[in-house]
Length: 120
Image (cartoon, rainbow, N blue to C red; front, side, top):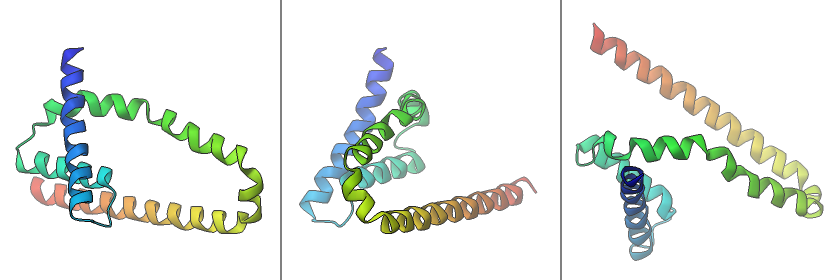
């Protein structure tokens, strides 16, 4: 249990660092994204070992669907406001889903090509 708490503390430290940097430098990026980018850089540079954060990351991924409940409930509670601009909401959802799908596909393809080159 203490190990998981320590792992969450590392992730929360990266989150706090991202929030601080974002607010100090008035960056157009949310602090949470900047913090996760800092954590990624730490992992790539070897300053943070994967085993130090793996348990916390797995736990977050396992319970990620719970994070989608409040926005969905908010949509149902504010259906009148959403219904007025439904076509805009559907357009944004469609375009963002397409971008994510294409980005993920190209990223996996690039990863697989690099993996094949390393194995050869």
